[in-house]
Image (cartoon, rainbow, N blue to C red; front, side, top):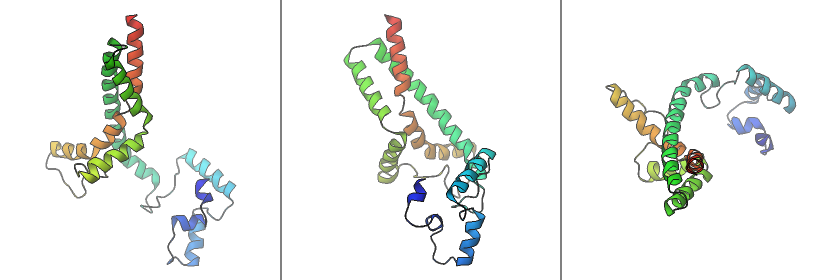
Length: 193
């Protein structure tokens, strides 16, 4: 609904190029179903999504969106898997420390730190980390899963390059260890009682 509330035509938002002829515009509108009523477009969107037909990428046209998703899925799953392991490990460790010292300054500090990080959205933490460590300090790359046009000489070189690109996304997700920390702390406190 939000793109429809933007002033102008949805075609202009996606393909706002004045060099496109009216004939080409009409052909593209028909091809993507943008000349149909909004409710029909929505129904087509829902049915195509359920069938796995996600259309063509606007940025990488004419590549299908499903192909782009399948290309990036292994990297996404690797990031998520590693971040989940780190989150669980750090959260459980801090939960044990906080639960063992329940009511102390250590417990309060860990609880406050965990809740503050849990309250910050992952995408916001990611942007802050990118700004500081990627843009300002230039320690890590700002995008991508690997360095463009880089051919690793061995597996360790490839892993190092991938790790350099994956570090900040993994860190931004792993900083959300508050849930596992709170569960472990409360479980340990109730067990000790």
